[in-house]
Image 1 (cartoon, helix red, strand yellow):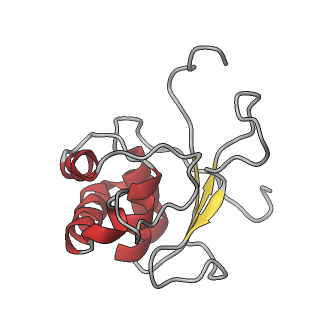
Image 2 (cartoon, one colour):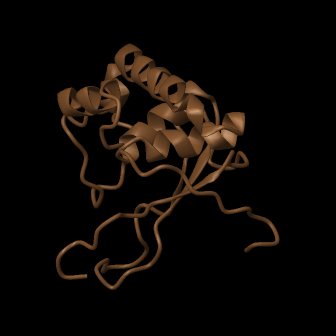
Length: 146
């Protein structure tokens, strides 16, 4: 893996997903606010793709919990708030880039593959496009029961 990938760390302050994408796109995580702004604009302009009550909703795997549209929008608008998988779809669309999402295997996931390990290709993009980066989901705390 290290032959083809170069691991990077970001500041874990709630902006980590936006920082990781900024690092991949601009080689500097200080542009995380711009990534967040572009994601917010995408969500506002294309509401039906990001509203889980819509038939057009971009997240098709029902094993992934998703927030209401209002919560999703609130989280993207507030610096330091958590990014969920739906936000990655908005980032993908905003920058017309695919993102490889990866969550390390755990015993807490049952029933096959981890739904967070997937290629994020929003709206008009194909999953066959080369991802701009691989974003690995991590946590600063251990969830109960793990």
